[in-house]
Length: 248
Image (cartoon, rainbow, N blue to C red):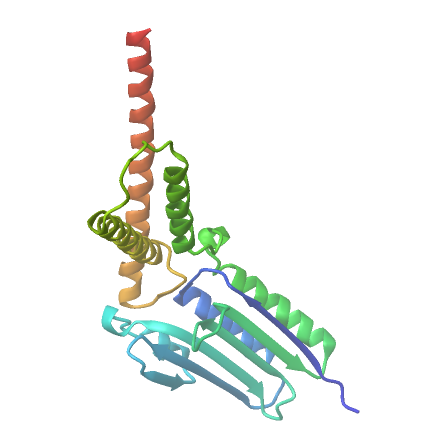
């Protein structure tokens, strides 16, 4: 019976893919499958407008314009030897409703070849990982709902004035109206936070064509916000210390 070895890994990292890393992956794949047989290599691209492109030339990918109205969302790489004894598959981004942002799988008839190729590809993929991948994947809407519930509980525990009359229909309607407004504001806040977070900390970025300038603007904006927060904290602490010194 012929030996077959498989190895696969998947990660839900936030990644940034540029021309240099794509070319290095291309080189590793071609070198790994260089065994005297014909190489079958195919790139599968999916764009934000739903269009698809298939090519075997890495140069066609790095020369993509990648505009805002037609951004690259997914790049899949599939390669195999002529006799299909060795296969390499890499996914960058989300082609369908999958959880992972990056994954790869390798199969072959040699354990040494599979694990050596896997280590080389994994090393390259790790270079795509962004520092903010460590952020916990917590839904901010759940946090806002928890805050809303805690506020309601706190308000309910406060001492109430004695009243000699019951709640009228008008007062009850007013309470319901206020709660609906508060809930609406929570949803609006959640939408703004989600949109802002997705823009500042994108899950998948392809630094190709117009995507380079777009990503540079995001990094610049993150830096400006960070410095703004730091300066605000310094000013707040300094003002508090001055007030404390004056009043003491």
